[in-house]
View 1 (tube, rainbow, N blue to C red):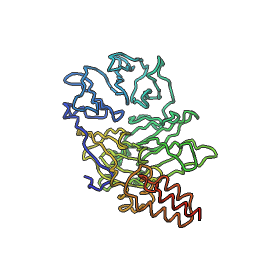
View 2 (cartoon, rainbow, N blue to C red):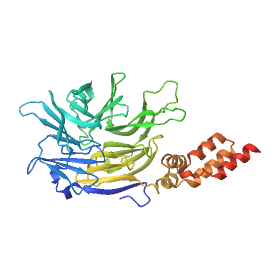
View 3 (cartoon, helix red, strand yellow):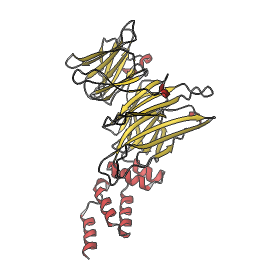
View 4 (tube, rainbow, N blue to C red):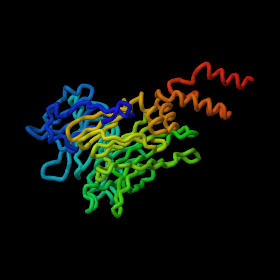
Length: 420
């Protein structure tokens, strides 16, 4: 596992099997984790029940005798969504309950089967059928509203994720399909990106995707970015890429220029592929997690590679953002719930010395107010000052991590210069 000076720290938060959950239920179809707050496990023997693990007190799981095909805890509150097929039909019965109040909030009978669903916001469920995607609000008595039809590239795919950007103007659906006959293990990843404003879809190849906000210098409005990771095979050649692209560029404003980077898979991971992506807004980092337990870390702004390591010896099937820590949770087939966090003390020195990327080290330090770049920041400040780039020097002083240059000495330096 990772060395002490590694930029990412891993720890086991808990093990599902230690809570009495049988190993056969530690799978993608039985376990859901919609946020860092709750894990939900559906058991079908010895009797049907739903186990809710509150991450604030994981040693006291809540077991309820419930029969369902799928159970999702709301990302923020103790609200449970349940889905069950109506016997003898292809219709699904959906219900939303308030666990605390023991009351049903709303229910709906879907005329077609829901093959995948997810809380895309604390107020909104995304429902995916074989042909279309719907949004269902927990507020009021509204029924699910159709958003778009699935594109042809997602036909016969297993849907593994669906998400929206914070403005709910951009939606992305991800599916996987069997690989080429010569590489059946390397599954194909397909993605559908939908613009609500333009009512238009774009079909792309990707295994994992996520949205992010990014402030481009000179633009007061944040840009919406889509990041996606793909691994494709063409005539025996495998290409693995990370892409970062701005969506809906703002006319007359500085935009984000698109970036791409290679994902380097070690030789014994040739059939491995990304299964999840989480973005840390706190640090401006992209986490790409693969099925066989590799973690790739990239800088959001430049798509520069920061780190790669194996974080799990067992296959990973589920991840969730940890916005509180700026990291993420991952669940593997052994039932380990792993928590990955940025090591605040080591990431900046790691980037500056191991990667020799001084600019990225300074940017990370400024972005997340981290230690480790003091000499670099002072050196950069002195360079700017010597080059009479006073505006940039002043900006660096104002943004300097941990108030390093926000000192009377710095003010005096400017005063001496401008008053002399």
